[in-house]
Image (tube, rainbow, N blue to C red; front, side, top):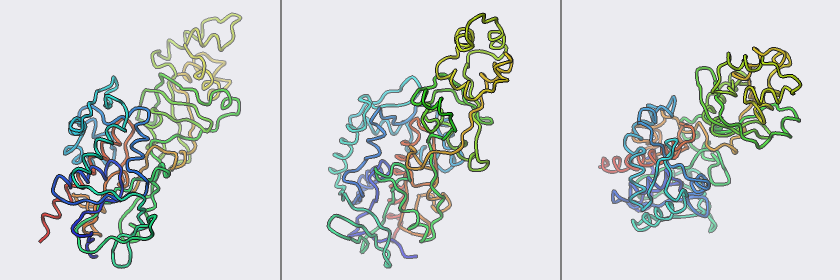
Length: 412
């Protein structure tokens, strides 16, 4: 297949999120002229939305633990992180005038917490380095001659004759209104690129709540619980929704939950509603005579189970459990919550699937499309929230930019 040729020696980047912008910076620093195209009126829209309530830029945990967050794709992602990981990302932000700090959980945030100051400083530096931005340019794939097709407010445009390389940083399939709609999937597949179907990641899940429970508890947080799925065990909190559950604890287990539902039709999450108490202690406390008090008051005073936790217990435990202190204590320590479906892809924080590792070389260039590189969330990796998503997007953009430089230098 013929190589991609850009305009007048300029490298084309399609997608103005963190991956595309980082690739642009690497290339500009390498002395390459860069054009960034994006379908939206401005770049970094999903980045800004992610930082609306506090931008979790990265995480300060040791590298081996950090890399493990990428699961089955650890070995693929780790070299990007080794080259441009959490420490390098914080130093890069500092060079932009953005100080960062490590929160109590190890998460790293800008001192001002927001994404906008960082993005403004970054775009100023990119423009000063000569990077050109073309907004409201929606990519439509390639024409029969291999040129890139765009639809713009001024009509259709083609980019393709006489230059060098292209980087696709088009995002995954979540938050379509911000630009990540996965429309690129069939265009790459048609050119022989191996792509895995896009799936929701870091998403909520449906639960078949009773009407009473839904009406009473939707919107309430469930705090200080431990969730177990097979050998995976996480502590944290989540939120009851009208359709089911969502929140950081659920997102941390979203990938195995999604895969279990896909394989078996449902997944059962075991919730420990009283992590600080043993089942033996709970059994003794519940067995204590309650006199004229209601079971709800008894559980609140003796077991510390009240409010939404008591509602969950009523929703998921049986009448037989309530009749036996030992069984009720066991239910409090391992309450089975049946999840029946992930929420739709467009509601997810991020997506899994996309361009498979096998389709790319070590520099993130498509094997079937020489001169075309890929980066960011459109690649087939996933990670939980906590700074891991953004770090890998930045790191893959950095890797793709360096890959383009290596490819250009190797050309005769």
